[in-house]
Length: 268
Image (cartoon, rainbow, N blue to C red; front, side, top):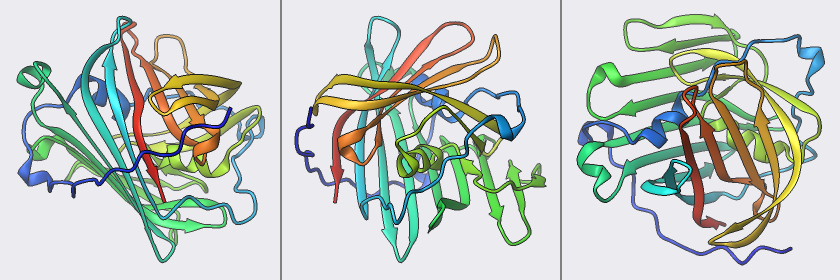
């Protein structure tokens, strides 16, 4: 079924991290700290590839509602902003608690990914994440593709490791999956969140239609393969909206559920 036309909105410019303070909404924390996945031989997984000259629109804004618990309690909001200039992208994510929850979880979670758009998809150059105003709650990652090395961690505590082809950060990975959709089988991607670096494996579950504020959306459902006791992630990519992420569901090791569900989407 064809989705309704995108709803247009005008996003405000993101605030610099020094203007923000406090803690982060729980639902947002779950996103920026995905579970580690035990690596298996790459030959067992299909590496995503970009078909032809596939490209995302030059500007994308997605507003999500943050939901916690099986009862669907709304706790906050998140915005993804994507901008392309001369085959370089900037991807920003901001999340904050709303309503009464802002009294207990003040502040903004800010993530920024910058990099190149290549025939193979996204090639991040830098990523950082700011949780409130404190410097000890900031991590970053620097991708040196010339030297095939990745440097990540808190300031003064960085680690340097080899950088495999196709590596992504925790924000760019969702848009790399959009560029390479539709998928089949099992996908494997090396991913960093600025604190650690792991290989994540995604199983393609199949097609699923979601009921959303944009109308019914035909989506591709993917589930991250995790070891027992680790956090779980399910991701839905919308076929009629450039395979962009429209729903993410997290279940932590204690069984607590957090979701991001699309509210509005602009792609132009």
